Amino acid sequence: MDLRQAGQALAAESARFAALGWMRGTSGNLSTTLQRDPLRLAVTASGLDKGELGAEDVVVVDSDGAAVPDQPNPDQRPSAEAGLHARIAAVAGAGAVVHVHMLAPVVAAHRWPEGVVLRDLEMLKGLGRRDDETMVVPVVPNSQDMRVLGDAFEEVHDPATPALIVARHGVYVWGRDLVQARHRTECLEWLLRFTLATDNEEALV
Image (tube, rainbow, N blue to C red; front, side, top):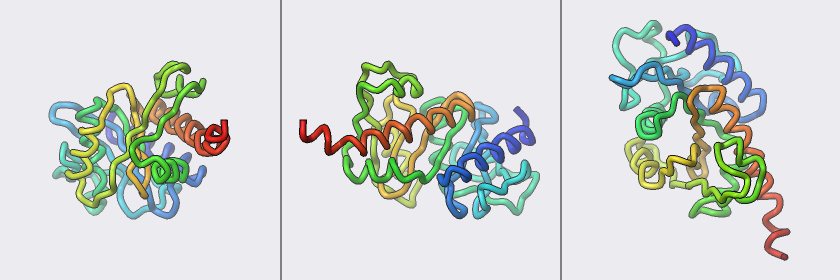
């Protein structure tokens, strides 16, 4: 995938998430891996309405999340969160990373700060797990320092769990490409909403 194709795909997925209300204002960012050695990612540009991006609204970043020289649009800048995208791509081997601000994971992390337990639900298959498995979505404290967040991610990373909740902030979900990352994000949102909605019921059983 070249940069133009990556920009088109990132713009389309951003518009989809914005329409769902998961990228409000200018929040959130998406990335797709362009190459592995050296690591290069195309990341949505910072400060723009994610429902109105064009194919040109992307920035190429390195393994630290910093914009590389010779950008097609040098005035564009990546989000500071590009550093965590790059760490996830490097550690988890992700081909694409979705960072959105949907409400369910933030509420779930507030309720279960040690990790959100999901179990015995058919929708777990959408995250590559069996429906009879238990999956714990890790939660890490928020930080403005992407090195701190990256280290926290590595400490809790489970290769079988393609998601990370940043407390009082949002969620990162990844996959082999943008389509799989989107599907996993949609499935995770359903799983978290169900778990929150039924928590009081299970406590009474």
